[in-house]
Length: 300
Length: 330
Image 1 (spheres, rainbow over the protein chains, first blue to last red):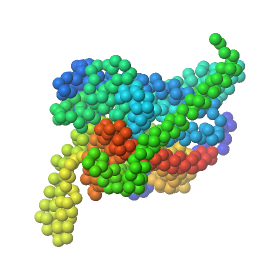
Image 2 (cartoon, each protein chain N blue to C red):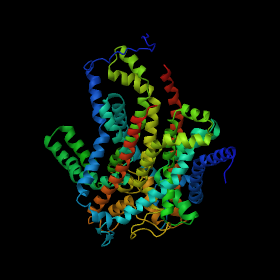
Image 3 (spheres, one colour):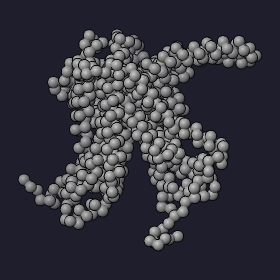
Image 4 (tube, helix red, strand yellow):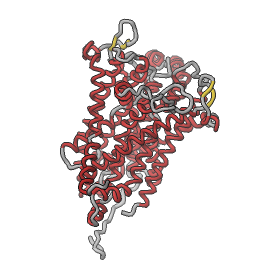
């Protein structure tokens, strides 16, 4: 059927009214109830940690060094260590990830090479984080002789988050319409110019969202830095790239499982966990908000 | 120095090609180093002896590197988790994609995404300080003492003795750090993975399919069961496979909450030491290039091979998934 403007006009039948099938509705309501599992779990864990950790969190807690064999004081070195690890990791991974995404979307031709690259990215995404830790230990710590250090940990984390950065950047670049590229090329711009002036600026919000959520993922990871970077105690900032650092997730793990003061340091554990969650979920939320804003703004 | 644009183009293209191959190189390097560092243990002791050996005593005097307890720990924990995580994950996916109103969807989707990048060390911590004490101080006395006592008092001929003894035997929880605790937290970690992938594939089922179903009088549940799920089946399978990969590879939760005993588990309340937990717990104390060090890389190599196979399967299945999507052209 066509209306006056010539567009196809569609007529939809509404789904049958509820109550048509008691069994079906029962199943639907069970599914609906189970659908909230994720939300319930998130708020349960978040609420529990916030309830126990809120009292510990204070300005002193996040700006002081640990004292009295870790049973008192703050967690400043762990916060700084995590920040440095994450920052260095992102500096390394973003150029490689974005360039790979540009290669995959703009330069690659269908064929065995492309298949191989895609397969590798897919496989890397499924490698367990502890295996990345082993790899970092064998390569960066031992072969490159970095020792347990900031640089070894950052590089390990960079390799771990690489597939995520590639695939989010690729999605963002793919979302730029082909006609934009053609318009730029038609003006006489070279391919490189088109990518730098048209494609990348338009896909930047998407790439940033991926980077933001990637940062959140990286800062919460423990297993890859356990044998490549993390130290039980350092005071203040590391003086070079080749020194071990403290990190928030590792700090929680060590205080909760090892050492002689597990019960005594419980408040610090809650405080550290709360700090970590606030940072991770905060970055996640910022990424999600950027993305939904951009989606609403998008006019093509 | 300003290069001619043709040269610039050429250089960029070559540079990007090199960078593009970076991830292939990384994957090959990971495989190479895992097998290089674990070769010694498989060569010295024999692959079969290691994989089927039941004694993991890496630091005892006659060293023994049987990985079966670790492998069984991983398999049993994964199975128990899958039992919770797959139904919950799929229900979440179906709810978000098919049932929830637009507003609830806008609220639940970010939550699921946030849960996916929630630090697993906090889940492990939560398992240790919340789930474990609940199991030992509340659930265990309730199920292994009060329930048998109640059954005996009730005096039902068969039930009172057999079931009471069974409860007494099987539901007594000696330590809160066990397979069950780990599974609960692993469920929390893997539900968002399963849910988000399955939700994508369910949402990509063309609307026309649903309308066709409604138009012949099918209810919502009929439509979900007979139309939506069958046409997104391969996407759902990919979600389940990748969920398995997440559970198998998750380290911090099993390290902190699974109890860490390297014995083949008999029951869900036994302490286990799954493979990632063994690596994470022992690597720090294994001397460089000792047999123990090589054995831990061996465990890592097994994990890598296992996840590699899962990736291959899910890649294969997702290729079929694209064929299903042809329906969009209708």
